[in-house]
Length: 96
Image 1 (tube, rainbow, N blue to C red):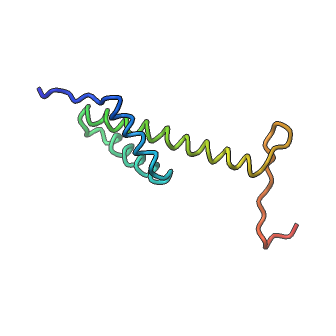
Image 2 (tube, rainbow, N blue to C red):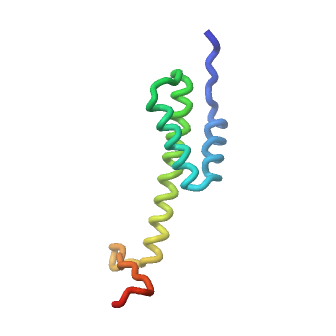
């Protein structure tokens, strides 16, 4: 039996930092790749765990990006009291 390679806190942090350098779309695409591999059930336990850990990090990264985008939209749309003011978007071709 070969010795297990344990992931150190530094390696986990480096993985998260690397994911933060990519775009939301790239992270989501990689997350979908990981999901497809895990769903096959053909991977060894250690490989599955490593991919799962990467997936959790990517999932958190995507959630942070979505939260930030939501915050930007709330700022752009403004607030009506303590509720976000949600105005319909119109194009130049639409008549009011």
